[in-house]
Length: 438
Image (cartoon, rainbow, N blue to C red; front, side, top):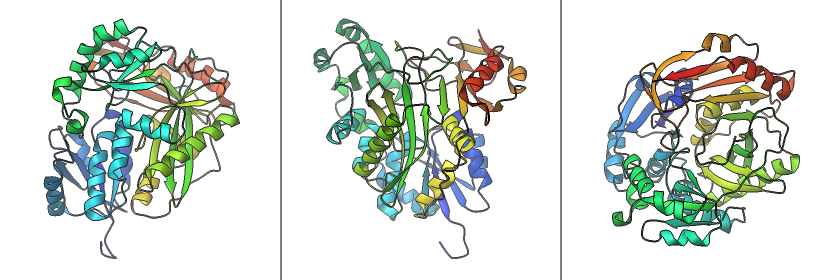
């Protein structure tokens, strides 16, 4: 990079409509930076490239095995000064760029820990962070799950969101459904960036994590039908110090059989003791992974006396999380990550936290979207801040266990009256909203 040129940033991106806000911000920063949008060569590209200066398509499937080809194409396109990592499947690609060009990036072992849920739990256990009882199974050793206390949760060892995450109340139920789940996982994740590492023996099928169900308790008063306590922690680490940008309360209505997030809010309403525990656990994770793993999205179940780790990702959260952090705290996560990727000290605000709630909106059942109702009423409410509808009329809407996202989200904010009023006003705003499917 010459003294007169703009820093060249590679944006590692796997398409998800919830990341529109990320791309819009990238487009707004093009006067200060030169952005190359990096996508899998097998993934369709449409409007996304309009937000960057250039597009580079790489073989993301089995990224480490394709390392030589990837590095050659990067040299031909232009070596980056830094990386902005937006999508979990692109983590190995970030590691490769760091190894080849000396830019800030996680270590290779951290990439395995940050995506492989089994390796993640071994890491957390060694770090002294509470986790559920767990085991890793394929069709070759499914009987190992019998040593756990049921009910249990089954989830793909490498997978995103709540896709194929399911509760089972008995080993017999798990055994009956396991072959179907392995087949679905093999289909959904066939192009994953670490598929050969995940499935070294294809005869055994896609591996799953089986872990004991942690019930979770919502530790604050709420009007929402959400008695199962859960939080996510958004954090960055630089120069030996962990900064908590936001803690989102994300309680759930129930404990299965499937798990779809339906609300996030910040600042957290948890007790101070739990806020300290969250900060301590996340700091331990950051330091164990090393300086290159400078961003984490970490999820815990909340109980009266402790937090129990569900998982973490070496990445920023999706669009609703990004916008919630910005609207509530004034911290622009993307600008912070660009600074860290360029090894610059970021500016982090800690002077405000406006109550902010984001509702994730789903079609009532799988089907083709026929209409959206009540959008005009929703945006007229005083606490309305913004919303995004991810799908169009005629698109297919999916629900758990095959969905990886909602169909829309809406953000409400109230600087003066706090969460009780904000929840009431949110309920009123959404009373007439629905997604019709056929």
